[in-house]
Length: 446
Image: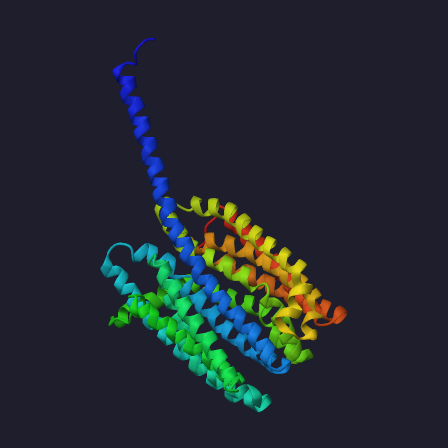
């Protein structure tokens, strides 16, 4: 056998060295992502379990009408959260990837400005809640106390959401998991104390949201995440402008999404009674864990996708859209199938209210809408990371038009169930538009 030439030996050695380097790089990447995903799942899992348990407890402890009113106020809180998420939280990773990775000074400037933007948003939204309580009190006095309690808890909720996202941006998912643990401990523990003291009321359980959020925020501050910093007003104005440029379309889209997905509860409460809204929320609660699971993936993946696109280009976003949508939708579909099969046995055990168990068939439209929203959520990661947000706005408003039209027609034909199927139609429309845009190579002006 002839010996290899020196040139060939050198080339073979270089090939082996490159292979070892690639394998080592892949191993280090897998190790890093193991920690990221583990803590992201721990964070979202603890947060999801807390809200799941609280919903089960309140649905069991409170009269059905009172629980229905609790659900209506909860949707108001979700509306404020949706605006913050779209205008600030979802826009922040792409801005940080472009302006905050150069040095610690740049990161500090962005963090400090973001803190004061969130404080301003929380204060303004709480003032609007106080005004809403005064207006609603003329029509439904029973909502005045809960809305004022929400106004007090709201700034702490806004800070919790900000600190949580900042932990993911800084690759400190373990801090987010610790925040969720303390939030759950205080929230569930506080609910049990209120129940034992016979102090459960709509206002007290809503005020408890703020106490749980405070525990989470303190955890973040102690860990060095989200600490308030003295910053120039010009920096705050700069960041607010950047967030508006990125998030103005998303905030409009969030309004449309809230109407087509969450406004069903106040609509049902106003048309058929608060008790019916409570039943629908109790059913939807069974599907909440998979929503939170996919949200954990969203939180963990979005900052990294934004970094990758900033490094290698937009084609990575289209690559992710093809694979991410399949993963998100498949996970949601598998979970929803299990819940649909187990519902006849699970509902009576959890809620101990025959009205809720008898409505198990309403899980079908709720489950289908969640699978479609999982598909849309994964596709939107690609667009958010590229700061292509106008199409998200357009898609959601088209979906809202579909919801309004289908809910009106189906509502007249089959009653309040038509509102739920209208949500399915809206989810399908929005998912189709967002996925098509995420896979497209076109860009948009911002």
